[in-house]
Structure formats: structure tokens, C-alpha cells
Length: 202
Ligand code: ADP
Image 1 (tube, rainbow, N blue to C red):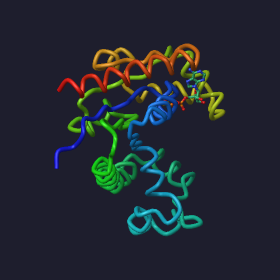
Image 2 (image 1 turned 90 degrees about the vertical axis):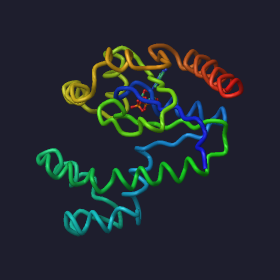
Image 3 (image 1 turned 45 degrees about the vertical axis):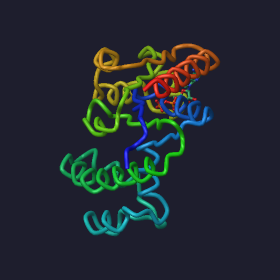
């Protein structure tokens, strides 16, 4: 069966992806978030736990969920483990994304892929690429307020993501999120209407 049209939403850490996803969900778009799926697969009794235990050992499972702190430490210090974990999770996330697209009952879906440009995953499911963007100082300020991470740590994470310029150069649509929430909501609504227009005209 043909899939509905899809918009991939991406952006740097703290740029506002989750916030934008919530807004589009209120407009009735079917929102599929790859990070949320990853948490679902590794959360309480998640479908990925048995394979993680087989590969990494039962000590990585705590209270029927992935011991995220232990796994974070492992993949931070060992790139091979990071690859191994990704090779377990990525195909499972992809399958779940496809299942959710099949069930999508809105005119288009919004697929949230934080590392879209970095990984090259999901290009085939993106009819348009929407980048949410704000200045780097704003990113650091918002992530620090949300997580308590130090500015150095946040800069290190940002350093592992593609540059802001690269992201903006490859966007079909950009939501500027350096200002107030009501401005973001209005801009998102305009974009949602444009997407519906595009679909109606095609
Ligand atoms: P991402 O998902 O890209 O990491 P979030 O959507 O979680 O980013 O936003 C990062 C933080 O900034 C969150 O705490 C969010 O509530 C806040 N935030 C996002 N956009 C705005 C805005 N326009 N005004 C104020 N706070 C915002």
C-alpha cells in the first residue's frame, strides 16, 4: 500500500524538535518520534531488551528496563559497543516507524529524526525535510535549563552533530525558534496549512 506523504523533522539538540512535534500533533498530524520509539523499545519490558541482554549481559537490564546510565557509560568509552547497540536498535526502530506509518490516519505524517543528516537514515521516508532552528547560544541555554548539563558538555554534543549551516542548506522548510512560543505556534500552523495545500494540489 502507498504510504502517505511524510515530513521529516530534524534540528540540533535543544532547537525545539519535541516542542514542534507536540504542536503539529495538536493540529492533527500523525507524529512519529524515533527517539520516543527507541525509549519504548528499551523501556519497561521493551522488545529490544532480550537482544541487549544477549549481547551485552543481563547486568544491563535493571527493573525490566535498559539501565541507561550503565549503557551510556559503556558506549561513551567503547565505540564498538555503540555500533553494536545501534545495529540492534536501528532495524527495530525502523520496523516500528513503518508500522506506525501504516496506521497513520492523517493526511501526512511528521517523522522526528534528530540525527537525520548525520546518519542518512529515513531519507526514503522524507518527502520534505523540516528543520527547526535557533541560535547556538539559545540552544545551550535551553538544554542547560532542561537537563542541567554543563555548557562544555552541550558544546561537545553539538560538535558531534552536523553544522547549523549544513542543516539549513538542506532544509525544504525552516521553523525559526529563537523567539517566543506563540510565534513558533503561528509559524508551525502556517506550515501545516501549506502541507495540506500541497497534498490537496497533488
Ligand atoms: P529538542 O527536542 O530539539 O532537543 P526541545 O523541544 O526539548 O528541543 O526544546 C528544548 C527546551 O527548550 C525545552 O525545555 C523546551 O520547553 C524549551 N523551548 C523550546 N522552544 C521554546 C520557545 N520558543 N520558547 C521557550 N522555550 C522553548
